[in-house]
Length: 525
Image 1 (cartoon, one colour):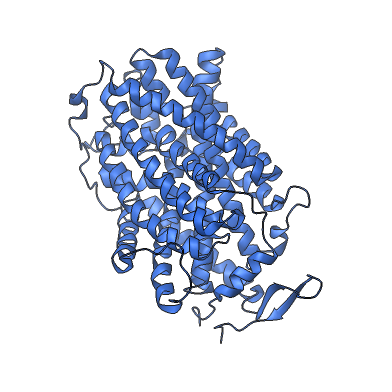
Image 2 (cartoon, rainbow, N blue to C red):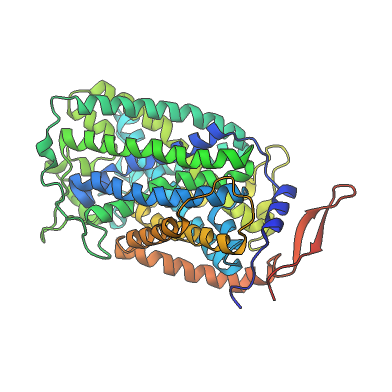
């Protein structure tokens, strides 16, 4: 039976307490982690890609994605406070729908976080090359060092995005040093980022260049571009949705959180509400000042974001100033409306702050690997914690290599769409988990109890499915193809080595505090 291995919550919590990561994060740090991930990806990086899909309808796309995130965040808040351990949707699924589906969720989260971190690395590279090197140092990197191959949607003459590769490796080193140190750095970067975006909003919305006519036509590709096209306001919402995974990353940090029953819901909902306002205001300022109409193909349909044809068109002089072609969209907007020095400062802010986004995404990725390894589903060597830094250094280094290589050769739009396939599946399963646990474990304390679960959880599932089918067809196919590989690994390696399947769990010996493996009562019959 595929759905018979359901890990008891008591066993999950006991295991986490014995072989746990250091609890060093407070509620404010958790909220900053969420803000650090959410504000950055969708604004600094994906504004251009979203505008290419929806034009000024990007405003509506942020609202659509935000609405789905609100109901998903409520589901996350209940289950994360109830099960305050590492692993996010993977761990929640393990305790509700069983090991097999939990494995598929964990496998999808690996896709989500690694690819998303690669996407933001590419976005950081644009600000580094355009602002730091070009504007301040007068250095123009050759195309073969600053972009991936044209065939993959990079740029004419592109070969490797070296800055993106290097930033991924630098963030990896920071994460290996330690979680607490990383959180302190992240707090400073978040402050820089929020200050810069506040200045952007003030300057653009009050600028003489702001013209409501730039929002016309508001929906050049319509609300629905068509199933599998990734176009229109809904298609753009499906792309930028992965920017909201900051609140998911907060839940993955639950095992390293002081007083998680109080701090996890605070971090989840607080970061989401704070960031959604910034999404909408920044998009309004950018489009209202220089416009945000997409580049159309011969058939009158917007060219696909991240496509080779769009890269060719953006290399043409007539599109040099287009928002949809900019690698550093927000700095470009300020320069275009006469605030060049401030635009350069914003570019510096992005240069300094976007690594916090990469940090949070890679942090979450390594913790998913960590807890799956701790359960025996991946090699247990991956869950070894460094004796000095108290971090899972082996899996962190491996993740950094994968993220860096993907960032070096693939464009941001393509990476964002691929990441969303895993994101939406994981969020869907969290909603399933909330409903299942309400039935199977109704008496367990819930520090945050969601009202209207029978309405909100189904809305979350429908919202995730709705956005998923509005991704480009290539991204839609990523999830089943990635899933087939994961299922092969599960049956070829993980199922036979699972601690739960073998009837054992890690606990603390009452005498001497030594670890031992003991039988447990499970539903694996």
